[in-house]
Every structure is written in C-alpha cells, then in structure tokens.
Image 1: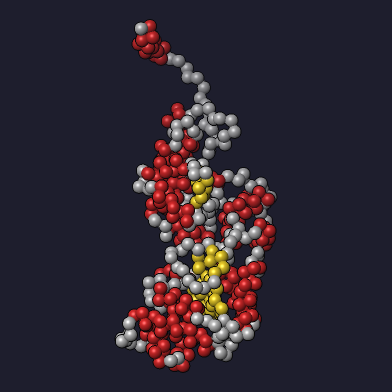
Image 2: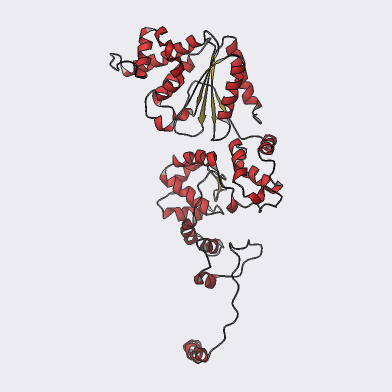
Length: 413
C-alpha cells in the first residue's frame, strides 16, 4: 500500500486507461533515493496486470553502464522471437546490437543508432497489437548511452500503439536527461502520510522516538521504514528515548545506507572531504568548517556540488545545515582539524579535544578544563572527580620560596 501518492497514482492510472483505448504515452519519474519511485513502478505493474497488459521491465545496472545496448537487451529479451517480423534494416540493427549477427555494416554510426531506436518503436508497436503493453525501466540513470538513446527516441515517437513507457531515475545522478518527455518529480511525503506510514511499519516506537525518526527521515518513505530498525531497543519499548540532538543522529541502516552512499561517492573528492568535516563540526559554523577543510586541500568552491545535490544548505551565509542521514559520518580523527580551527573563546575546542580521547581523560585535558557555562550539556563519559588539595611536603615548602623571589624582585623594579 502506498501512502500519500494519490496524484502520482492518478497520473499513471490515466496513462494505463488511455493505453487500453489504443493511445500511447511515456512518463519519467524523478526523485531522491528512497522517495518511492520503485514502489510506484510496482503499483503500476500490479494495476496493468489487473487490466490485461503485457509487461516488459528492466533495471539499470551501474556496472554495465559502459556496455552498449546492455540495458536494452534486458528489456527486450522476452520479445526476441518477434525480430523476424521487423523490417530488414531495423532487424539487422537490433541483431547487431544484441550480438545475434556480424557487426560489419556500411551504415554510419549515427544511422545505426537511429535504426536501433526505430526498431525498438516497431517492436513495441507489434507487441501491443495483441494486448496493451507496459514497459518499466527502473534506475534509468544507469542505462548505457546506446540503450537510453534508443528508448528515448522510441518514446518520443509513441502515438497510438497502446504502449506505456515508465522510466524512473534518481535526481541529480550524473547527467541523465530525457528531453521531450513529460516528467513527474516525487517530493517528500506530507506529514499525515508520513505519520501513517510510520505507524504502519513501526507502531512500537515511543512518542519521542517517533518524533526523532520523522525529523530524520524528512518525508522519505525508505527512511521511514529503515530508521526505526536502526534505533536502540531501549527506544522502541516503554523506555523513554534520549533527547533529540544532532550529535546523536539516527544511524542509517541496510538499503538506505547503500542508496545514499552512492549519491555521496559520485561527488568530487574535495566535496566529500568537506562533507566529512561538516559532519564532524556539529554547530555548522561555516568559517570553522572552511578553515579546517583548507588544510585538507578543499576550497569553498567545492561546497557547490554538495549544495546542488541537496546534501547541505547554507543558512545566512554563515552556517551549514546538513541533511540528516545523507552525509557521511566522521570519526574521532577528524576532530583535530576542527579543534585547531575553532575560535579559542568557544567551547568547540574543548568538546573536540574530549571527543578525540578514548578511555580515561588524559592529564592535559584535566589541566585545560575550565568551569562549564550554565546550560551546557554534560561532557561525554561524565566529569572526572576533582582531586583534593595535595599535602605539602617538606621538600615542597623548601622549593616554593626561592622560586617566587625573581617574580617579587621584578615587581619591585
């Protein structure tokens, strides 16, 4: 069951209804990872099967994106028995593309691509003569160039064949585009739909944990389904959850982590470095982040790619707001650059000095400790008990006086 996608389901349902009457149409679904594109395709497949459609489907594979016609072969393999019915040039074009004939040809490369697209159109039209046809292509951003060109060429020429072509692509992934085709962008779920989905998938959450998941998911259906499983067992029962804090962001789990990892890994290396520094600096101070990143060969211009991908936002040109769950998590080793770049008058240096420590607090931290301002959260691991006054020994009393005489003489001067 889909929550909060009534408009999208209505648009797809209209295409299926029109195809049942002999019309054709194509639609591109775009959105961030986990926003519900694949779920909409599954819903369309179920609705088409109930109406007597024939189904062809394929999913783009990232590791085959450099292999010509690999995506098209996944989609049209069930229909290869119809190749003999195509016109000769078109049939030979698909046979060469799928490795069913010799690759030698006297046609230029551009003419061969045109013939491949026209052959796809003719093949889909022939399949739709018997019953309406639904073609589903998921992860279209990973289609190889030859397959994408052939499918888009055929989609732009669909008229009255009874064919529906639905393509789903991630937003911001590479430079995949579908010029000339209508697009439908999937946004976050509305608040009522997000509450309903979370209640259906994780009804055992405490109220505080429910608020925490809703804030982290930002209306992403996959996050709403995966993040409750990543919570500690103490937050899914009757025990009260910990307060909402950005430093204690809910960790990603399973498919959600893999989906967002792909989005971050395609950014430039310097941009990934900036995101790691930003995740280590919880306050989001832009000046501190840029100073720390400068020592790692990252510049302010490298932040543009992260903004375009929707991973970070600038607030008042002085602070970075990270999208929870979508940025990489930094370890303790990144605190060194933050500690050296933070202003001395703030608590950032003290917090990151403590965060870098594992186990008991080192002696240098005990010497550098100052009185904690009012309202400041407790330090991780608790406060170290203060030592009482040391007992003065005879040696200490003897060495104390001479050590202070030079200081007194300077004051006298």
